[in-house]
Image 1 (cartoon, rainbow, N blue to C red):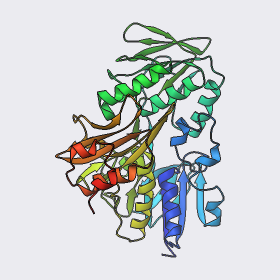
Image 2 (spheres, one colour; image 1 turned 135 degrees about the vertical axis):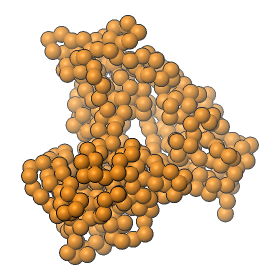
Image 3 (cartoon, helix red, strand yellow; image 1 turned 90 degrees about the horizontal axis):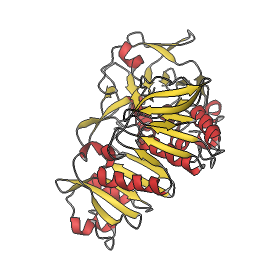
Image 4 (cartoon, one colour; image 1 turned 180 degrees about the horizontal axis):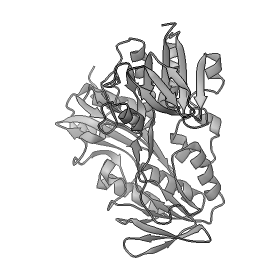
Length: 411
């Protein structure tokens, strides 16, 4: 492998983890990580949580320390992303015109914020949210408090940003297309739980409602108009309506695309010697036999490891149970499982929503397919084991806090 060259297109968690894993596994060939941003690869979850709230610095979000790349002979090219792939010639072209040959290519281009054609979206005070620079800008707008913030989007990021804005002492109004926030992800009962948590902290909701325009004065946002005819005063408007996989490179190169770059369990794409990992990859999961695309950090972390091992010729598969977490006000939540298998299934609850400490389980044909813990620690390991074992469980025991979860895991 000493004469090989692995190129990683994407300077996020998946790409940097792949580079780290290659060296940890003993790969001796050349490794180049090409990132669109000028920043050393970092993880995104803190951007809408502890970093945004000023509880962590930028270095704490780095995948590996900045000097790791030089110390491990990994070339890091920042600020000039890959702009073209030639699968036949095993070449990539960068935005600045440089060309790199590769023996293996990992596409870890991530996702980009979904945009909406909203009049006034270019006004000062209106912003999207995705990058560390976005988080820095938003923190500067929120930290003094006293601002009128309109949050457009009722998903996980929207709810986290609303919580942060309110924690700083701002007035917050949140718009969403759902009747209940997060209901598409976790169902109406649990979505309502999150909504009431926010309302108790002073966040106001407009549901279902959408923005139809942003008004301004002297180039600055002053209000958001809704489809219900309401005019919401606004100093800060945040648009967080989801992301879409950044597949432009792969599409132009003729790779198979279906809600992301279609890859097998080893993360190999339809093009020879080209893999994909992280937000951009729609990977075959051995557990379900179906393709799944996940936008959460654990998928990028595990995908980077699997891609590196696959590129080294190891028999690696992305077969871990998906995981993510959120922190909102005093609430800490962790979720493991397959959201696509929970649609239309009401959860069963272990513990008490009223007391603010519980686990919600989703079961299909008697088997646990997902589990969400709220304000409970050290329960995700047995939850993942329950999912992985695919053994029907006794619901009465599953929902009884007196029965240790470990006792329900076979073996």
